[in-house]
Image 1 (cartoon, rainbow, N blue to C red):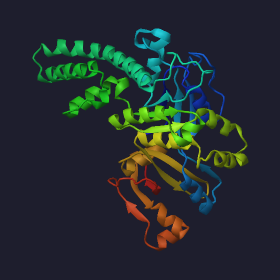
Image 2 (image 1 turned 180 degrees about the vertical axis):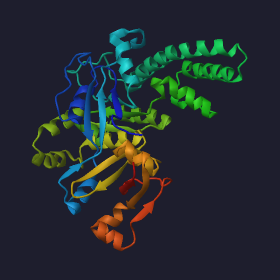
Image 3 (image 1 turned 120 degrees about the vertical axis):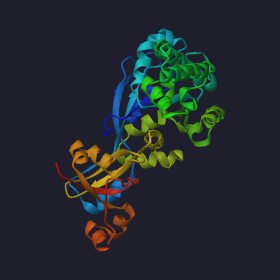
Image 4 (image 1 turned 135 degrees about the vertical axis):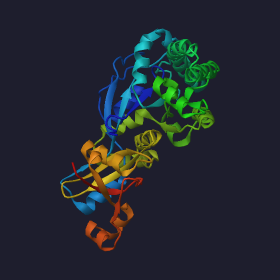
Length: 369
């Protein structure tokens, strides 16, 4: 299972700061960031490194020719508006872009500024979140209609599995019509999990909220952020407060001046670090490392993956011909300072196909093809 191209879509109403945030994330000016709706039409994609101090520590010991961090893709999707599911504001096109991503970073405006127009004329995070969720639900109901009609016709043949599928779609429809997202529907069988997954519903995707605030809000909080947190807590979702304007200013500074800039603002690290890490975690991902004279590299694998699946991230041949994985714990390596020392201490382990990878493992695969 190769995890190349794992994507997190940046979603929200127009003029909430999505494109400014995207520009900061990718330290580029790929996305237009203008003070008018629909300035983003085609989705911009940026591949960004996952902040991880561990790879720097490994590199300092191994001294490789190069260092390669884990990465995640962010996709800047144009602003949705009320009526998007019926095509308002090019809505159908934008909703299709959301269908392609693995998770959603929902940007919500949490600052006052009369010079930045809000599409609905006022700042109201609860209303803004509900507008986006309603449009996603309406689009999912369209998708559900097609599947439900086919299942109903099949159920008339007396096939019990077809009847169960039809009943599931009816239960899902009732759930969505109450304004609930598909991911909160209790699933009672493996078949139901499969039927839900096959529809690629927009409201089945994992979501984190990005509260785009001002300088004061990012250091002291505000009532808008509190509202977003209350909504997120009910959904067991995460909130990352960020000032996209500060983040954009930060990436435009020379590297040597960034620490002082953050310190002057009372911030320990860029807000983007928290966002990228939260998105990585939201997707259920973790990191393992390979370390040698050619390179120290962080590889992305899902949490709970077994050794052959981790091997496949490097190359599918590694999984096909998997023999064993030689595993060192990062803490042992950093303490003993070399693979030879870890091996001599008896802490380098040989693991088979059933080994479940731990976040931070240093691995070397033996295979035969």
